[in-house]
Length: 199
Image (cartoon, rainbow, N blue to C red; front, side, top):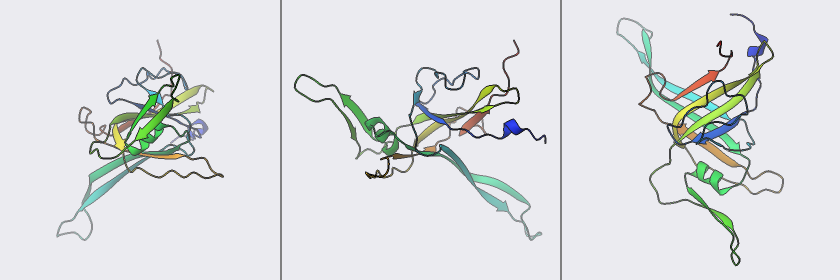
């Protein structure tokens, strides 16, 4: 394996959300450029954006051997997590699987945004995207993108109002299988652009 210094990546990341099935940004879309219609930038984060994939295995044991002769994956999970920095009704709705709305001010009433949650079984589904970047061996800034096809809020969380800390909103989403994708690609895909088109 070659030792390529530019393959050592240190990057911040942007977190995006869209309705399931939204068009992905083309691999030719520059870092920090606008993504296709439907994608919404979730804004500032207080913690790194993390994608955690875990799986359980079954060790196949036979009577003739003392150790496993085969191992298969029998359960898998993918979670994205971060802490959103901006305290808005829309961000609360993302984290707590609730609803948000905005009411414009009138001549007699104040404008406000509102978040509400409670009493619904359904969890809203969204598609998620993460964008980081790296500088390749030719000194070109290139994107690294992760796409999660379908996910819902996973756990809720808590908000703390503290005079010495930002009142961040914990966000954890858990992926669902997208059965329209081929086996092996049903949770997510990660792409690191390494070259420009040749044409």
